[in-house]
Image (cartoon, protein in one colour):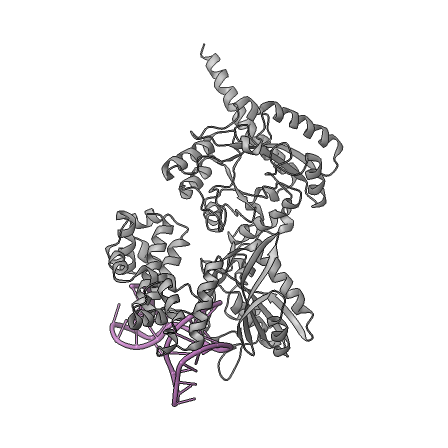
Length: 596
DNA sequence: GCCGTTTTCGGCCCGACTGTTTTCAGTCG
């Protein structure tokens, strides 16, 4: 069983126990363990084999035993018994906003409701309103919640939520007496998908801000409206796609602002750790202050709060309780890469294959971005749906690049290819053609439904090929649309490390592939990462910014990302790699002759 | 279920808002 499967099983246990009315702390222990396993940087199989799982904080003997059973047998009788004792429909009912485990249990115990459909019918008959603890309004909210679930996905992508959040903030900034405003939550932490927009405002007239907020033209429904907090359901159009999600607004005073900013940025797990840390110093920490009844610890910025807790300032992207508190304690947090560190990119398409812009147009756009180099990597011959380039077309493109390089100043075009990794792990061009490129991106575009073992072997074989410089979009996933192909990423990253290959962070916001957790793993093994926009138009070159966000979440410093290097260093490294390959081939031939 | 310079029991982060309640439980983040 993989990490994800084990984590899902533990999380399900936590949920099922909640529905049984178990001790909430016991339930939380399962949810917590699930999170720990999912975000694990080490290999789960190794930990199981060494019996060191229970050394991880939050995983005790019971949890270790269950995880071992899951990993070694692929099953867990405890979970199976739980499942058979609780109707699956109850878990689904939890997704209805406003319904938690207590209410779902009450509905099941008292009215024998065990599915969303039965609940909807009971609401329509007016039975819910008569139940103790429920009422007319609850019944109505349940009905609206069910309708909402049926029309919309739970999460949206970062690139969809960011512009919508910007629109809202733009309007709120203009309200009188708004002294400060920030987007918090998962958007500020740059998670790849977003559940809601959290906005924090500093103002001494909260009602005025709230009133504007709940009357925004994008608001479809007001979910809550209080003095310091309001929630609405928003919808808007981003890049021609309808996006709807919840937005929460909090208004605080200036002295409260840094504490509120810290609190609402989260993650929940990170702020819980900070609160525990404050408690161990005899202070309470909440969204308004830190200290005791008698004395508060002053802070004007988030950094002041961290400092008071004897911690280095933790950038929002790292606040996931995956080791950042411990690193901040030792003052060993990385200096994270920034957008301005990027000097060029290596994965872009032109009209020669399936891109929208010509070579010239892409070059001009790269110049406007201030880059030193732009690597062109059109598709290879077998990918006919994307008009992959024949060897002749490749040579024509090389000539065009040489010609353009003669005219351009300040930008160097590099000859690359996004070569297909064929079904058997070989590459889609002959070696003599591959030898003519400055670098090679190797990617999978076909036969996604292979078994995990076959796909892993296919990609690892390609990584071992000396012509390959970097691996493109390692899982092929499309966020909220399709899962990646099944592949053992741990093995892929280890293979990349072994052969000195780079791995791409594909910055298309629909992909963000490699994901931040595996970026962290690759970093730990010394694998260089490359932030590539996979641009199919001039505008899409700016996607590199989303790649930088992923890189920051993956703890990357500038030195760990290849395309932060200046042109001279890039050319030298690419040349070195190619020479190592070609001279190896050449030397083999020479020594062969020498023996004769 | 986890955890321990107030250790093997008794805690476990904390506040806003809502709805159904005469003082609070449930949900959410």
